[in-house]
Image (cartoon, rainbow, N blue to C red; front, side):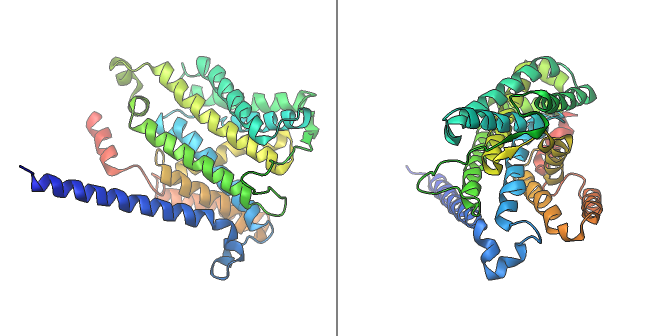
Length: 342
């Protein structure tokens, strides 16, 4: 005999799934059309005073979103404070610059190398550093970020303080050319990367790595007593986060056609970390919102020159006092679980 209640619940669940799918597809379509918002009447206010709207949309907004999602795996999901995340971004960028100028490989062929070298760097850093906790881990990661910058500053292969010039742009993909005065193609590539990272993080979250990261974030000692291999799962988060940063670095170098050590300072790491904290630790959509605002706002108020840094800092200070958990904090049920665990 057919249970009408179960059948009705199944139909309702399928309908909700269809609605979510339609909403996601519409959202992706709207976001994909954002490069043209600056030239559209009702949204022309998005244009920034000095830089091209499309250029700002790609960097810092889109790349900050991508790097924020990568750092969120380390900071938001695993609870590990990484102050040297810019190092992986730099490794990806220099991989693209060096291989792009010294070999015949194009951007898409170099991209796996940039991701691989960033992951190796994350693994080499993580093996000794992830045995530390709290402030000690933060200091070590901060030092690693500065080491990468200083090494790039002093090596001949990286061009020293002069950097690397003539980095090639990506070849056309699906008939779409990458031009200096049209940044839409770069945005679409980064958008695809962002969607892949979101999908990957959501898959990990509902599986064993995600549960292990959650346990480590709440209490490392309890997680160890429950049988979680702390070092292994910390390395997972570090290497995956590094891979995202390396991918972003490859696209960044290919777009700017020039990189130098001064582009990868401690300030960049702090800004990406601020995107995660400002948006909401551990919340994917919060990180996206936070990175979008922190990437766009300084460019939007650039017309007030040096005072923009003061205004930017005051806005951050006010909002973080009003919303100490970020704009979109973790779900209430997760907070309840944390309180019960304590």
